[in-house]
Amino acid sequence: MDFTYSEKTEQLCARLRDFMDDHIMPRIGQWYEEVHAGTYPVSFMEDLKALAKEEGLWNLFLPGLRDDEPGTRLTNLEYAPLAEIMGRVPWSPEVFNCNAPDTGNMEVLHLFASEQQRAQWLVPLLNGEIRSAFAMTEPDVASSDATNIQTAIRRDGDHYVINGRKWFITNAHHPQCKVFIVMGKTDPDGDIYRQQSMVLVPMDTPGVELVRNVSVLNHHSPEGHSEVLFHDVRVPVSNLIGSEGDGFMIAQARLGPGRIHHCMRAIGMAEVCLELMVARSQERKTFGRYLHQHGSIAEWIARSRIEIEQARLLVLKTAAMIDEAGARGARKEISMIKVIAPTLLTTVADRAMQVFGAMGASPDTPLADFYTAGRVLRYADGPDEVHLQTIARLELKESRDSLLDAARFLAGSGR
Ligand SMILES: Cc1cc2nc3c(=O)[nH]c(=O)nc-3n(C[C@H](O)[C@H](O)[C@H](O)COP(=O)(O)OP(=O)(O)OC[C@H]3O[C@@H](n4cnc5c(N)ncnc54)[C@H](O)[C@@H]3O)c2cc1C
Image (cartoon, rainbow, N blue to C red):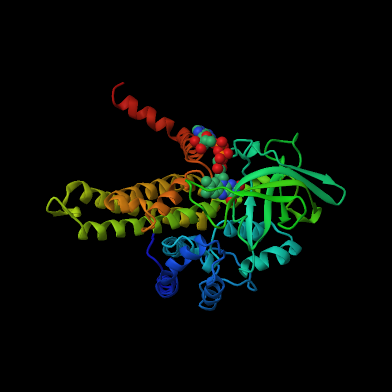
């Protein structure tokens, strides 16, 4: 596999870096000030979105756009370095309409929505006019196994009636969030993978209640990881995505590319942690030496570089495999990178925090935010253990073909 960035990718990377330098970096302080003052979305967001669109840095994540849909048609492999650049400032992907969970939701609508659903929801999402949320996880059941989901989606004439409680629903507190994709059960007694369906629920439907914005590691996210109650929520049957019973299959399709977008951004964050660690270690001295002259810190720097390079290569391989074989063909790689990238981020962020001394735990560096992002990513889009189980299952399945070879090795060694 050749991972050399194409000329088109190099050009886009250069333009994106310039945009980040000129428009994003100078506004980091203001973003935090406004968010802490309770203003969200921040005042400059719409201006920056308009500028990004004008400059063709828009919807970079979605390969299969129609001719009439705005965006830059890139493969997952071409998108990888761009997502990495955006990851360096965690709020910046929204400027380019490349933020989760809207990206995953747009992919779902792109693949499965009816023409009417596309016009009502996908078009304004692709234009960045509204935001959306994906509501699967429930407090009352272990949601890493999506077959456990209990929310009821009951047919009543021309409507579905939805009852259930969800939490950790990212974006639900975003003031521009207008629609949920809700996963629930239309056929609780059916085949275990055909019980679930997905429906579009406009935010302003009676019975939708935002209960609270749940903080993560005591970190407040302005867009929310929210607890949401659906109480006798009625939507027309035309709001069903695909057919009844497609929910599990759509959930699987949704999480393929979306999972690796998180990993691409995590690598960008890990790069910033390493840059800060290197810079700090060259300006602080203890016991007569710069910090990098102490062996332990030099080793952290070296190990961080090795681990980032390893993770990046696996992200690129995974992206190339999704392009060639689809998310299903890249299942093992998607799970592998989904385990590696969040741990890489927490490891490198943790080392950098240590090099900064107490300042590393303060809000005066982005390190604590990066650490938090890495740690919570170990649950979001499936906990590590579920991905490890997938990898082991596939490995065992593949190994059946090589059992004969293994037997030969054992025979050859005289045992
Ligand atoms: C920041 C953040 C954002 C999120 N955004 C969204 C969102 O927008 N929409 C949404 O629907 N959900 C979202 N989630 C929820 C996330 O997808 C779930 O937390 C995740 O799927 C795990 O479900 P659970 O929390 O119910 O854990 P449980 O299912 O209760 O699992 C608990 C633990 O059990 C262990 N475990 C599970 N299965 C296995 C296994 N096979 N082998 C060994 N151990 C196992 C794991 O350690 C796991 O962490 C978000 C979560 C976070 C932290």
